[in-house]
Length: 101
Image (cartoon, rainbow, N blue to C red; front, side):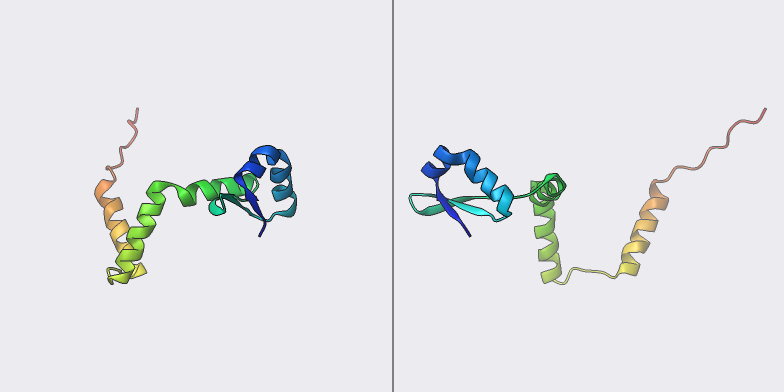
């Protein structure tokens, strides 16, 4: 994986970005030899996935799900569907008939 220093990136940003885009290879950015970031190639289709996968709410929920699984707090698909059906029934309002006339 290519590595560029932060000064080199500052001087040649356009060329480095074009190279990442062309080669589709991520490039590590360093500051005084220590990694501080990555220039990662992606297109418009990848953007939504990236944003969603890194949204704080999603990351927190995913971490909680991992803890739940590790602690055995799970239930079957059938139970999940039953719970959703019960919630649906509890929150749905009675249907109103249109006035006849």
